[in-house]
Length: 444
Length: 89
View (spheres, rainbow over the protein chains, first blue to last red):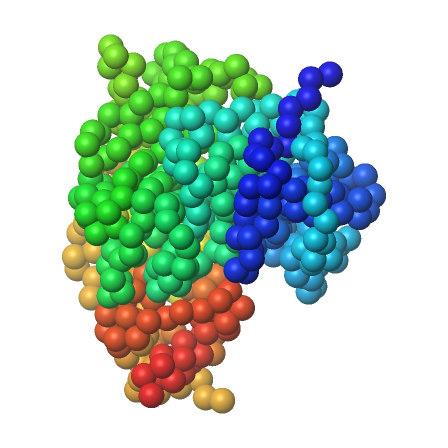
């Protein structure tokens, strides 16, 4: 059986900054070993840690114990409850006791105070199912992505090589959660395999983010998303020096990237990927619009879409985005199939969201769709046109809010007399957009 | 405990609707003590971020919070308005 190391850092290197204290790799391993010994039962570990360092500790502990980590699509109580019900033998791990959680749970606090130092780097079976990532944002069955340790390990090594911050020890602050693949690969796995210090908090407001970055020594990096980055540049707080800025989950405009590079005196790198394949291409939007595929990946056409394959992936992955590939292997993104939407890193099918809408008592007809893009960095929300003569808008919104993730709540949500369906019953996009624009104009 | 909006709460409700593109909601529909995020208004954490930005521009105050406090401040219209007023005082 092949084994791969849990991490590849010198034991004496700092690997994490936790509440102002630097932890060495040796201490990080010792803490993970302590937590690993205390994991009850034999089932999977549901990692609910908010704190980035606590998350890393819980993931390492699960790997050391040969357990699979389950990563819920979000931390909404309903999502977590469903996940735990489906995995009755699992244990929930967090840095705080979660009230009202009727499930076996363990707190990482005790492990955090362990000050022993490990003397060797442990190995993990390459075939161990290290994580199952749940990707659905809407209610209903989530889709699962299986990540053997080999996949996570190799992804981390590839990422460090392709877009890592380089040989100088870099402090890395992030605004994204570690449960999501973008956050997991960059903020947890990158520090395990590159000279990077993970900074434990997850700052939220612009002022908090800038203050935390400013406390860190240079070089320092920020892992974020276009929404958070736009929020930073629009905040009245002055920006601070950031040597490397990484963005993913949605396209970053060249304008915003230019502004960040000028005001932060750093380099902006955009990364493209998906939960199934992980990070797979990069570009620097200030200098070019085309994407560079990582060397470990191969692209092949599969009907109208593209597939990526790589040695370390369990299977080929069909990409949801439409690609236009040039002779030199670089590519551009040309949108995605209209049914699939990705909002704030959460995915859903418009058809299934519309089905949820139609299932509401009193709704005669309706559609949830993507309106024409606003064209700035704001999150493009969905819109809905609904025929429901017996319902008020408030009743409708309330009914819908109970059934779908807030990320996909249509806004605006408009009541109309009828949808412009063609004779076939189909709803041509053009007619839909025309009605939508008319309704938005006339509404007060 | 009143379900009526105070004048300053009304102003904040208008800012919420304007900054979050909630045109199909009327300001008075945002009840002062009803859960603002994750409830029936369908608002999420990205809205919280947008709203914080709009608040800093309109009121000249910076929202700063650790996770714990953040959850409490954003609980409803009233708690958010009280927090802004305490920052401005």
